[in-house]
Image (cartoon, rainbow, N blue to C red; front, side):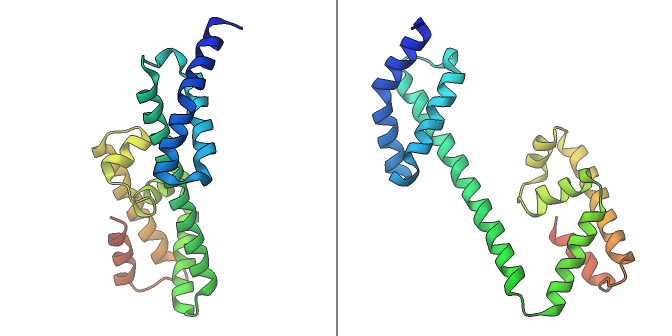
Length: 175
């Protein structure tokens, strides 16, 4: 066994139970094993970055993994709720409106669609969305403005488009 393997095994043996107990205290037993496994996988990949003592660092990683899992679950639940709303919808106008928006979004290029989705569906601020895209907040706002204008143009030119006020309101809702 190499020195790194031995050091990692020692750290794992000393800290695993405490990391697991922390995760259980935060989220329950059902996901503790998964979070702890991911925590130690990250620890192995970043082994040279782990300070002494390792436990606080490991607990921080576990906390971040847990937060990522919670965010992913919220996204899954949100998508499931949206899909349920689509299948349970009784009002033809609302279905037609959603279909028109989805069709309009599909006609935009990938970059425009991503900008709108980051702000409208992911709820990011322009500053945070700019970090995702890898540009300045000012550049993001310009791109977002153009994407919104393009969406409005597509919505207005669609055969089943809503009146101008509805399209304008939709654009404003996504700001």
